[in-house]
Image 1 (cartoon, rainbow, N blue to C red):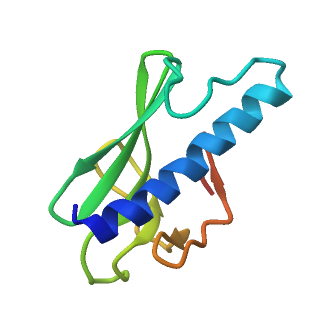
Image 2 (image 1 turned 180 degrees about the vertical axis):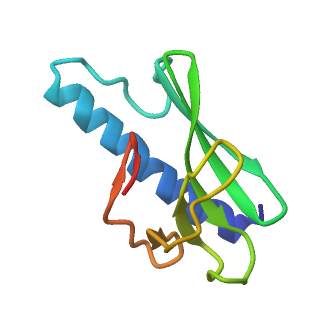
Image 3 (image 1 turned 180 degrees about the horizontal axis):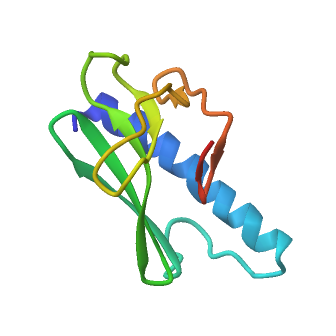
Length: 111
């Protein structure tokens, strides 16, 4: 990813991390500060058409969402829900990382 993409992707990942921290507080569990929580981590996997946002929660990996890398049916930066571990749901976009609009983002996924 280039620096521009990194900046916006990091903001998106931070929104997901913030959702996890909020959930921890609501359940009475103390969230870790910053990005160092060993129970929850996020990584971005480069693909040809999408960036795959993978989360690891207590050792279990799942796909959080996909972000479009290039213009096609969806604009670059569009956030798509995961249909499977390797494929996004292509029915409609859930937001765009460049517009910083992702109303349905939660640590459990995007609605």
